[in-house]
Length: 246
Image: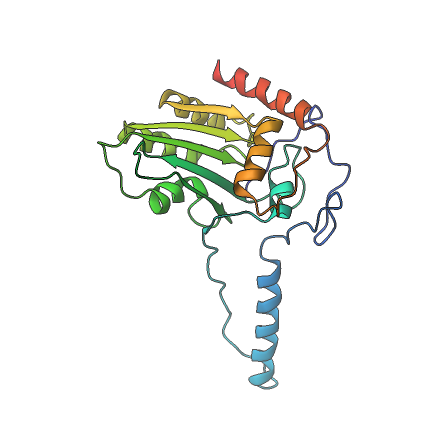
């Protein structure tokens, strides 16, 4: 499970949010991973024990793995919580990856959508190349832009770099809301490998959050207002990324 960087420089939210608690008056915090599934399993197990009599003997029930979620528009509450460029707090254990793919053909429109993972199988970064863009044509010039809730882990960074090295006609820019465990040397090496493979790494500015809100969020035509300290936190992460890229 991803754990975001903790630093006294990046301002905190004030308290750790609980499941179901309101976020800035905009809606509920998404339920923590597995909460509903665990309740369902508890109910099934209780029913099985009762059905098997007083001895309560029954086979353990295994949950299926979480799958990659694909979609067109992100829930606005999810976006405001998962993309917030602050220090880690409870619930930010997913990766949201919004993508644009331009194949440079006049008769084709931009591919647009998002991927969401639960970190039990393939991460969203890997799923993009396996599911969203599985067929690569070396004669086509691809321009790919990602907007991610946090930067890639070391394994995903290596996988992306490998894909870019094998697919020479791809130009890629990756915007991140937060840096994931940026003090870890493996993470830093992975980000540098990405850069060397031709991927442009950027931190999301307030205007980028507004763009993602307008392009990838089911916003009901509501205007996005950046949260307090959005610019300050961007500048902090931008400086850290620049240090890593030296």
